[in-house]
Image (cartoon, rainbow, N blue to C red; front, side, top):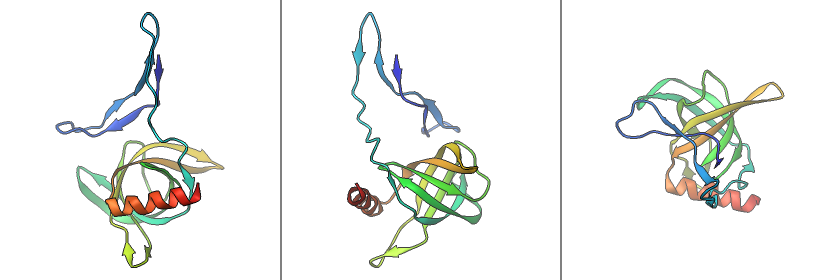
Length: 146
């Protein structure tokens, strides 16, 4: 059986995220294989400063804390975050800059995993909500960097 890494999704009526493993194929006696349509490999290295807050049950908690992206993809990013956070936490982030008279709106994301790089934790985030214009700007940057 071929499966991707664990993913999470919040579903209406559930209080905790549902964890699932996307299946790409099964083996004998019915060998079936699906093509992975994700856009992996489109992540680009880009450093963007932002402020972030913990979100719990749709409530913003505490003071803002600093963060910075290290990579961005179509629906994910890797970032360094200062402050307490753990996998499956939800966060709200706002980029700390504007471009061409456009300021980014709030982006919501879920912490998927954490990995240490030279002793510094890097968090993998799955973007759960982003304004379409903001997404278009990020996608333009991804395309230009590739």
